[in-house]
Amino acid sequence: MNFSANDLFKERASAYYAEIRKYTRYMFNDHLAFVLVFALGAVLYYYSGWIRTIDESFPAPFIMAAVLGAVLAWSPVYTYIKPPDTVYLLPLESELKAYFQKAVWTSFAAQSYVLIALLAFAMPMYAKAAGTGYENFFVFLGAVLAAKIWNLFCRFRALNTLTGQTRTMDIAVRFLLNVTFLLAVFLTEYVWAGAAVLLGLLWLFYIRRIGNRPLKWELLAELEGKRMAAFYRLANMFTDVPHLRGTVKRRAWLDGLLPGPEKGTYTYLLFRTFVRMNEYIGLFVRLTVIAALIMTLSGLLPIQLISALLFLYLTGFQLLPIWAKHGYLIWPKLYPEGEEGKQRALQLLLMRVLLIQSVVFGIAALSGGWLEAAIVLSASVTFTLFFVWIYTPGRLKKMNRF
Image 1: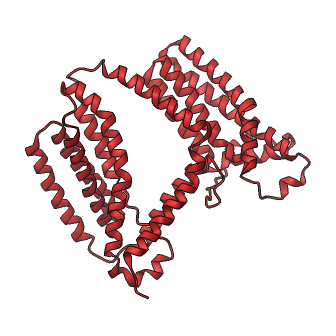
Image 2: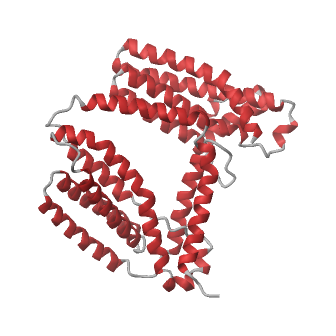
Image 3: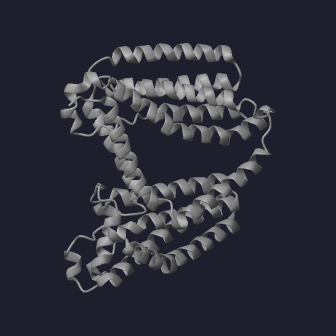
């Protein structure tokens, strides 16, 4: 049987997107879509109001170049390589040139939507600061997409180099070249943009020279594994994912703050699951820090209130799957608590976690004043009570049906 790189890539890509679709149908339903639309509407409303306050001195081109330059430097290549390929595809490496070319172009198509959305979002800010219209949008878009293709080819070649330091240097150099090129384009200094393009071509030539060696199959498989694990962690916030294997850390210094076995089997189990599994406590810490920073830096009550309620919802909603984490263990079922005891344990956990978060949000809202902090704290506690005692039981019934 003849080997076809194109057929192999088509099969791998189809399997990947079928896996993505299987979980996204659970992720974007129910109340999440409403919350996302509400949050997006609030962001756009305050963004449009903020744009009216800026003038010609605002450094919009510099901000756009820095943000888009960082996104461009990220540019992962979706190779769909699996651990067994490090053995079975190794003898066919010379025949896989078409496979990896398709991987680069597929990655370009999949990631271009983010760049288009970011540029469209930033254009009103640019037009207001520069005193122009939107006539340059397609010129800017063409420059950004061309830079994206260049970044992807550089990234793929850099993955073939010997050391991690070289790959880190590649990201840093590409970030600086991206910022230089985009800044020249946004300032319509096309002579400097041409110079940046020349430097970029020289860097691509250099990366191709030092990366001209056999593929690092283990690295490609590892990166694909990490990328899929990140998606599974996201999907696990909405439904049970059998592929996910969380990492566990003891954290004995927190034991004194946790309820003991006398409080109930599931209470003991779920509290320690939350504290010791990185996917849960890490999620709580990340969302709390992000929301607190937004609220502290904004100082505006509407933004603080929306941020507090939105991040409380995201935290509580994404902690609900912890309820089914130990569903296949027989030992907790030996104790006479049943599903009602399990639900009470989850509600107790959510109550404590969200109340801690509410207090943090109230403190963060002090940047707007004492009255604002009191309003945010009161609204957060009220929302926590609603979420734990009214929303959670209904949501668990839906989860049981699946």
